[in-house]
Length: 134
Image 1 (tube, one colour):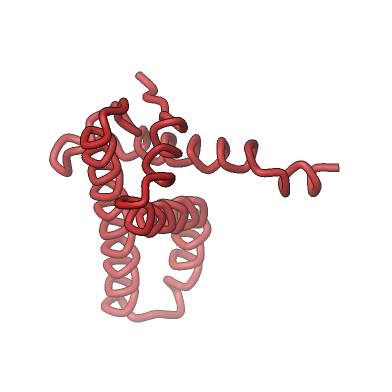
Image 2: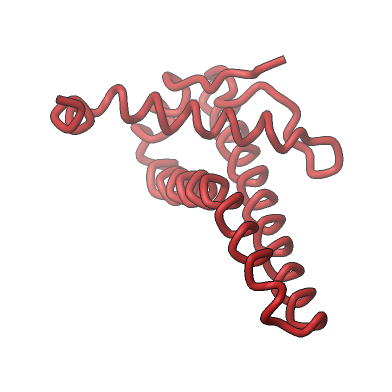
């Protein structure tokens, strides 16, 4: 099941003086996560392409760093969504994300898709994207 991002809740949090700064920082981290997810396949291909020119330990080290960085970014995204949901609850608005966001039981693809929905919604609501689409 695909869970949607509640843009109105996100906007309510960003508009609240007590939550705006931290919420904006969280949003920036979610945008960074989306960027990381978009380049995962390319990075994995590049690492695999270099496999022949690396020792086995160098290759394993490169791949472990790649996988660790990806996991750290994903866990930070989970934390960010959780924080936004807590802020939404404190303001009495629906959660920003309604899916499962615990580290142990998350669906990586679903969370990534939800964050991409958030990015797309922001682009669609931003006058700048309409200027470049022509």
